[in-house]
Length: 263
Image 1: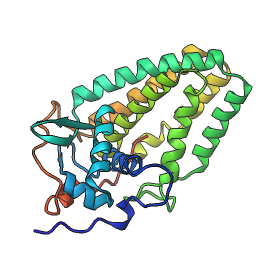
Image 2: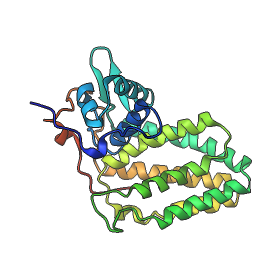
Image 3: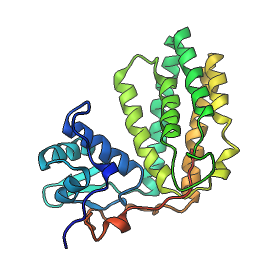
Protein backbone atom coordinates (compact mmCIF):
# COMPACT_ATOMS: atom_id res chain seq x y z
CA UNK A 1 0.00 0.00 0.00
CA UNK A 2 1.38 3.38 -0.97
CA UNK A 3 2.32 5.59 1.95
CA UNK A 4 0.11 8.66 2.26
CA UNK A 5 1.62 12.07 1.75
CA UNK A 6 2.56 13.86 4.99
CA UNK A 7 0.36 16.54 6.45
CA UNK A 8 1.49 20.00 5.40
CA UNK A 9 2.04 21.07 9.00
CA UNK A 10 4.65 18.32 9.42
CA UNK A 11 6.71 19.19 6.36
CA UNK A 12 10.09 20.75 7.10
CA UNK A 13 10.08 23.95 5.07
CA UNK A 14 13.04 25.05 3.00
CA UNK A 15 14.53 28.50 3.29
CA UNK A 16 14.11 28.78 7.05
CA UNK A 17 16.94 29.03 9.55
CA UNK A 18 19.01 25.96 10.29
CA UNK A 19 19.95 22.84 8.40
CA UNK A 20 17.47 20.26 7.14
CA UNK A 21 18.70 17.82 9.76
CA UNK A 22 18.23 20.35 12.55
CA UNK A 23 14.72 21.25 11.45
CA UNK A 24 13.78 17.60 10.95
CA UNK A 25 15.17 16.85 14.40
CA UNK A 26 13.06 19.55 16.04
CA UNK A 27 9.91 18.53 14.16
CA UNK A 28 10.33 14.88 15.13
CA UNK A 29 11.27 15.84 18.69
CA UNK A 30 8.06 17.83 18.98
CA UNK A 31 5.93 15.00 17.65
CA UNK A 32 7.55 12.41 19.94
CA UNK A 33 7.08 14.63 22.99
CA UNK A 34 3.46 15.32 22.02
CA UNK A 35 2.76 11.58 21.72
CA UNK A 36 2.15 11.60 17.98
CA UNK A 37 4.10 8.33 17.96
CA UNK A 38 3.32 5.57 20.43
CA UNK A 39 6.08 4.65 22.92
CA UNK A 40 8.05 1.71 21.56
CA UNK A 41 6.85 2.24 17.97
CA UNK A 42 9.37 1.52 15.23
CA UNK A 43 10.44 4.51 13.14
CA UNK A 44 10.91 3.69 9.47
CA UNK A 45 13.21 6.06 7.59
CA UNK A 46 11.13 6.10 4.41
CA UNK A 47 7.87 6.89 6.18
CA UNK A 48 9.50 9.64 8.23
CA UNK A 49 11.07 11.19 5.13
CA UNK A 50 7.64 11.40 3.52
CA UNK A 51 6.03 12.70 6.68
CA UNK A 52 8.54 15.53 7.14
CA UNK A 53 9.50 16.12 3.52
CA UNK A 54 13.25 15.54 3.85
CA UNK A 55 15.79 13.09 2.46
CA UNK A 56 17.14 10.01 4.19
CA UNK A 57 20.50 11.53 5.16
CA UNK A 58 19.14 14.47 7.21
CA UNK A 59 16.49 12.19 8.71
CA UNK A 60 19.11 9.67 9.85
CA UNK A 61 21.12 12.49 11.38
CA UNK A 62 17.99 13.75 13.16
CA UNK A 63 17.27 10.27 14.53
CA UNK A 64 20.85 9.90 15.75
CA UNK A 65 20.62 13.25 17.57
CA UNK A 66 17.36 12.23 19.25
CA UNK A 67 18.97 8.91 20.18
CA UNK A 68 21.67 10.81 22.05
CA UNK A 69 18.93 12.80 23.81
CA UNK A 70 17.20 9.63 24.99
CA UNK A 71 14.01 10.08 22.96
CA UNK A 72 14.82 7.50 20.28
CA UNK A 73 16.35 4.05 20.61
CA UNK A 74 18.56 2.47 17.98
CA UNK A 75 20.42 -0.73 17.14
CA UNK A 76 22.09 -2.17 14.06
CA UNK A 77 19.56 -5.00 13.92
CA UNK A 78 16.30 -3.18 14.67
CA UNK A 79 16.93 0.33 13.39
CA UNK A 80 15.19 3.18 15.25
CA UNK A 81 12.21 3.26 17.58
CA UNK A 82 10.52 5.62 20.04
CA UNK A 83 11.84 5.02 23.52
CA UNK A 84 9.24 3.23 25.69
CA UNK A 85 7.75 4.76 28.83
CA UNK A 86 6.98 3.06 32.13
CA UNK A 87 6.49 3.80 35.82
CA UNK A 88 10.03 2.79 36.77
CA UNK A 89 11.51 5.13 34.19
CA UNK A 90 9.20 7.94 35.32
CA UNK A 91 10.34 7.54 38.93
CA UNK A 92 14.00 7.58 37.91
CA UNK A 93 13.43 10.55 35.63
CA UNK A 94 11.66 12.53 38.36
CA UNK A 95 14.43 11.84 40.91
CA UNK A 96 17.13 12.89 38.46
CA UNK A 97 15.18 15.97 37.44
CA UNK A 98 14.84 17.02 41.06
CA UNK A 99 18.55 16.47 41.72
CA UNK A 100 19.83 18.46 38.74
CA UNK A 101 17.29 21.27 38.96
CA UNK A 102 18.11 21.68 42.65
CA UNK A 103 21.76 22.33 41.86
CA UNK A 104 20.86 24.67 39.00
CA UNK A 105 18.28 26.59 41.03
CA UNK A 106 20.52 26.99 44.06
CA UNK A 107 23.33 28.28 41.86
CA UNK A 108 20.98 30.68 40.10
CA UNK A 109 19.74 32.06 43.40
CA UNK A 110 23.33 32.44 44.57
CA UNK A 111 24.70 33.98 41.39
CA UNK A 112 21.68 35.68 39.82
CA UNK A 113 21.47 39.44 39.77
CA UNK A 114 18.54 41.82 39.48
CA UNK A 115 18.19 41.22 35.74
CA UNK A 116 17.71 37.52 36.39
CA UNK A 117 15.01 38.20 38.99
CA UNK A 118 13.22 40.41 36.48
CA UNK A 119 13.41 37.67 33.83
CA UNK A 120 11.81 35.17 36.23
CA UNK A 121 8.98 37.57 37.07
CA UNK A 122 8.43 38.36 33.37
CA UNK A 123 8.35 34.66 32.44
CA UNK A 124 5.82 34.00 35.21
CA UNK A 125 3.52 36.82 34.12
CA UNK A 126 3.66 35.68 30.50
CA UNK A 127 2.73 32.17 31.61
CA UNK A 128 -0.20 33.44 33.68
CA UNK A 129 -1.49 35.62 30.85
CA UNK A 130 -1.40 32.82 28.28
CA UNK A 131 -4.42 30.47 28.08
CA UNK A 132 -3.70 26.77 28.12
CA UNK A 133 -6.06 26.19 25.23
CA UNK A 134 -6.39 28.25 22.02
CA UNK A 135 -10.00 29.28 22.72
CA UNK A 136 -9.51 29.61 26.47
CA UNK A 137 -11.57 26.49 27.16
CA UNK A 138 -10.51 22.89 27.65
CA UNK A 139 -10.25 21.09 24.32
CA UNK A 140 -8.25 18.45 22.48
CA UNK A 141 -5.98 21.13 21.00
CA UNK A 142 -3.04 22.37 23.02
CA UNK A 143 -2.03 26.01 22.93
CA UNK A 144 1.55 26.14 21.59
CA UNK A 145 1.97 29.61 23.11
CA UNK A 146 1.21 28.23 26.59
CA UNK A 147 3.63 25.37 26.07
CA UNK A 148 6.39 27.82 25.13
CA UNK A 149 5.57 30.07 28.08
CA UNK A 150 5.55 27.11 30.47
CA UNK A 151 8.94 25.93 29.29
CA UNK A 152 10.34 29.47 29.31
CA UNK A 153 9.28 29.89 32.94
CA UNK A 154 11.07 26.76 34.09
CA UNK A 155 14.12 27.69 32.01
CA UNK A 156 14.22 31.15 33.59
CA UNK A 157 14.52 29.66 37.07
CA UNK A 158 17.89 28.06 36.31
CA UNK A 159 19.18 30.52 33.70
CA UNK A 160 21.66 32.19 36.08
CA UNK A 161 23.43 29.01 37.22
CA UNK A 162 26.29 29.79 34.79
CA UNK A 163 26.58 26.22 33.54
CA UNK A 164 25.51 25.48 29.99
CA UNK A 165 26.07 21.78 30.66
CA UNK A 166 23.70 21.77 33.59
CA UNK A 167 21.07 23.78 31.72
CA UNK A 168 21.35 21.40 28.78
CA UNK A 169 20.81 18.35 30.98
CA UNK A 170 17.80 19.99 32.64
CA UNK A 171 16.30 20.83 29.23
CA UNK A 172 16.77 17.23 28.11
CA UNK A 173 14.97 15.99 31.21
CA UNK A 174 12.19 18.52 30.60
CA UNK A 175 11.61 16.94 27.18
CA UNK A 176 11.44 13.46 28.67
CA UNK A 177 9.02 14.58 31.37
CA UNK A 178 6.83 16.29 28.78
CA UNK A 179 6.36 12.95 27.01
CA UNK A 180 4.65 11.59 30.10
CA UNK A 181 2.55 14.71 30.50
CA UNK A 182 1.24 14.51 26.96
CA UNK A 183 0.67 10.77 27.11
CA UNK A 184 -1.28 10.86 30.35
CA UNK A 185 -4.99 11.62 30.45
CA UNK A 186 -4.87 13.54 33.69
CA UNK A 187 -7.89 15.78 34.21
CA UNK A 188 -6.74 19.36 33.86
CA UNK A 189 -9.09 20.53 36.58
CA UNK A 190 -7.29 18.22 39.03
CA UNK A 191 -4.17 20.26 38.38
CA UNK A 192 -5.77 23.70 38.53
CA UNK A 193 -5.69 23.65 42.32
CA UNK A 194 -1.92 23.58 41.99
CA UNK A 195 -1.54 26.44 39.53
CA UNK A 196 -0.29 28.74 42.29
CA UNK A 197 2.74 26.47 42.63
CA UNK A 198 4.48 28.64 40.04
CA UNK A 199 3.75 31.81 42.03
CA UNK A 200 5.03 30.21 45.24
CA UNK A 201 8.27 29.26 43.52
CA UNK A 202 8.70 32.81 42.20
CA UNK A 203 8.13 34.27 45.66
CA UNK A 204 10.76 31.98 47.17
CA UNK A 205 13.23 32.85 44.41
CA UNK A 206 12.73 36.60 44.90
CA UNK A 207 13.20 36.15 48.65
CA UNK A 208 16.45 34.29 47.87
CA UNK A 209 15.18 31.40 49.98
CA UNK A 210 16.96 28.57 48.20
CA UNK A 211 15.74 25.80 50.53
CA UNK A 212 12.10 26.76 50.10
CA UNK A 213 12.42 27.32 46.35
CA UNK A 214 14.00 23.89 45.88
CA UNK A 215 11.39 22.20 48.07
CA UNK A 216 8.55 23.83 46.09
CA UNK A 217 10.09 22.96 42.73
CA UNK A 218 10.63 19.34 43.77
CA UNK A 219 7.04 19.15 45.01
CA UNK A 220 5.92 20.55 41.66
CA UNK A 221 7.80 17.83 39.76
CA UNK A 222 6.63 15.11 42.14
CA UNK A 223 3.03 16.24 41.84
CA UNK A 224 3.05 16.01 38.06
CA UNK A 225 4.64 12.55 38.23
CA UNK A 226 2.03 11.42 40.75
CA UNK A 227 -0.83 12.56 38.50
CA UNK A 228 0.69 10.74 35.55
CA UNK A 229 0.98 7.62 37.70
CA UNK A 230 -2.63 7.90 38.81
CA UNK A 231 -3.81 8.32 35.22
CA UNK A 232 -2.74 4.72 34.43
CA UNK A 233 -1.44 6.00 31.09
CA UNK A 234 1.79 4.01 31.23
CA UNK A 235 2.78 0.46 32.06
CA UNK A 236 4.39 -0.58 35.32
CA UNK A 237 7.34 -2.05 33.42
CA UNK A 238 8.91 -1.11 30.12
CA UNK A 239 7.43 -3.04 27.16
CA UNK A 240 9.41 -4.41 24.26
CA UNK A 241 10.44 -1.71 21.81
CA UNK A 242 10.56 -1.41 18.06
CA UNK A 243 7.88 -3.94 17.17
CA UNK A 244 5.33 -1.79 15.37
CA UNK A 245 6.42 0.33 12.39
CA UNK A 246 5.15 3.79 11.54
CA UNK A 247 3.51 3.34 8.13
CA UNK A 248 0.37 4.60 6.44
CA UNK A 249 -1.51 1.65 7.97
CA UNK A 250 -0.32 2.15 11.51
CA UNK A 251 0.13 5.92 11.71
CA UNK A 252 -3.43 6.48 12.84
CA UNK A 253 -3.09 3.94 15.64
CA UNK A 254 0.27 5.32 16.74
CA UNK A 255 -0.96 8.89 16.86
CA UNK A 256 -2.78 9.40 20.15
CA UNK A 257 -5.87 11.56 20.61
CA UNK A 258 -5.21 13.26 23.93
CA UNK A 259 -7.85 15.46 25.50
CA UNK A 260 -6.44 16.19 28.96
CA UNK A 261 -3.39 17.96 30.21
CA UNK A 262 -1.33 18.30 33.34
CA UNK A 263 1.33 20.86 34.13
